[in-house]
Image 1 (cartoon, each protein chain N blue to C red):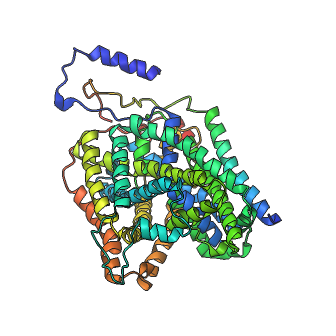
Image 2 (cartoon, chains in turn green, red):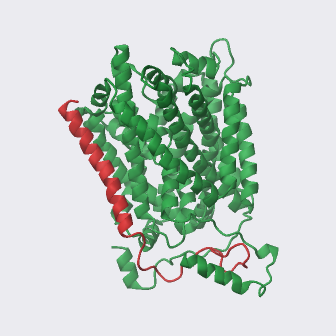
Image 3 (cartoon, chains in turn yellow, orange):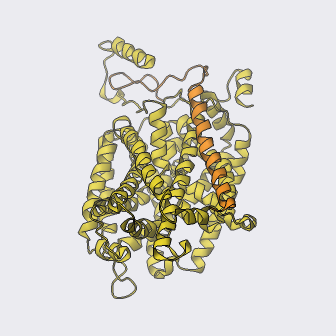
Length: 542
Length: 55
């Protein structure tokens, strides 16, 4: 408030005194209105579809209750530290990913664009999943999928082509049931982004995140009291301690934390750049990280209770059911709600929750692209948002609302996540921490503005543990993909769409880096590092 | 639920949700620092004012 008053006075005092030429005019950097708006927006970004449909399956496959040990270790040694790294970069260097990395070292701008490219590729298919969830929200009211949710999803809803059989791997046969909601999603997300960080992004999250918690909360509580729910929870939580000696379980835990926190592809850098300079960073960061895991665990309770119920109804074991990814959401869950009392209501709650979780994450993904374009090409928010939104919306419709959309989505998702995001995080740690030695400066920055202090342990996490775990994941994935074509798809198709997507990340990063930077150049970093007062340095570097 | 599953569920919930509660309480108790290094004017140069310092 005081800050606002000072600002108004300053503005009045210069009015009419200094003539303002158009070229000297600079739009202000937008700012979240405060702690709550920022925290809810960051939670909206982190809590996405993966929290609902990825975590339960990963936990079950990796030792059930025993998985919680590596999961919590991964949260503390990788999730929170890398979240802080993103926050520190965005907050100190006050820019979207390309701008922030450029201020670390000129040529690193390309790493920022690499992250923007990841967001571009993810956005075009992520929007489709949100659109599917929107359709299923509508279908819920009449339980339109009937007795066979699997056939309904791939047949009536997606009209999936018989690739590898009668149909080509890629078609332009559009499916109206996907195309129409997809266009609506793009219009909605463009409207939110065009309204700005405060009036669009923050407002959307302040509404949707509490609503998501309430809607999903009702669903989880109901699921817990279904017949057979206890069996589901037994399956999820019964620990298999012998699995703790298995390296792959630890890698899975680091992967789950890493993928679910929305780190290392520009989102948290961009969001933290919209915080006031004197803003607490690490304490809200802890709230965001624990909220994300808290929601994930909550979703695990709900999903496995519901699976236990379905298994009891069908006389099978929980292990026989689909409990991960697209099939859990669009086949298994519809089957569950068909069989539970007041199914239509709970179906609508589930798909409404998916829409909200997905939509807020999509907003954050596109804000990365929008911010980067605004800063590099000196575009207005509206121009950047519209240009980006329309272009990506068209690509999204052309590629993913056809009868081959699901196959393309599955492939691009697998390659961009496992190679793109993991690679980006490794590059980030290597260049920021090792090559340009920015970790002490970033830690000093975090400590200078935050109430929770970051100790020296952080260097070990972002300099050693995170890159080592991620390199192992990366190498393992590359070997796996070379050994066995992903999803047993056609190898030429995978070369073009899967490996092609990864190539596109690099090509896009280079092409976006090449043009002259048209945005504002001068920048004063604050607080100065190293600080002149040795006492300050000592206090902040404890 | 069997005992080991129940125990693991409680431990997981206490750690993750407990961590969340502690994080929220810590933030409420100390929302901001009392002291900041000198400088650090915010970016409020704003729509009608000339560019004073580009941050």
